[in-house]
Image (tube, rainbow, N blue to C red):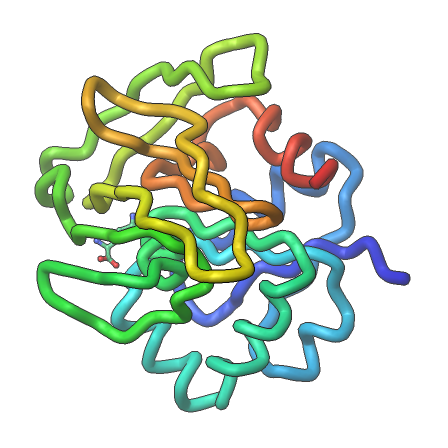
Amino acid sequence: MTNTVGILGFQGCIEPHQRMLSAIGAESCLVKSPEDLSRISRLIIPGGESTTMLRFIKRYEMLEPLRRFARTSPVWGICAGAILSAREVHNPEQDSLGIMDIAAHRNFYGSQLDSFTTQLTINGLTQPMESQFIRAPLLSPLAATAGRPEPTVESSLPGQPVFISQGNLWASSFHVELGSSSALHERFLAL
Ligand code: GLN
């Protein structure tokens, strides 16, 4: 059984994940086709532009293979990746994988110029985590679809969930791969 971490490789913030994973001794590879999913044990859907990634996912017929993969394997959607994982996407509405029972309101935290970095307290981590919000969505938990566990908020800004888990699936509205701590990547490897 492979232990390689896949990174959806069509577009977006890919290279910082490769660097961070290699720094902690984890193998990674880019995922661009349904066949690539058979070579990995877990998947990061990186930040970037969800509309563009969705176009590639559809063109390479990956909607169903990704949904199937997420039923049993860990998937971490970051920012645009969280939008793609969400069951409901607003502002504007957009298709998605719908693998997590969350709603994503796109660009809630403003434009590129409103980007900010903050230190977040995250369940299970002893140190606050440097976190970047870049045209980030607002994430909200929804009632679980039958057969799935309830979504759990793992970190919040005042009144706003920013990191939600649901079983083997994670969605964070922020990036951590641009900072110096690999603590969240290490936790993802342990899922
Ligand atoms: N605003 C982007 C989108 O809607 C996400 C931005 C990001 O991933 N940093 O897809």
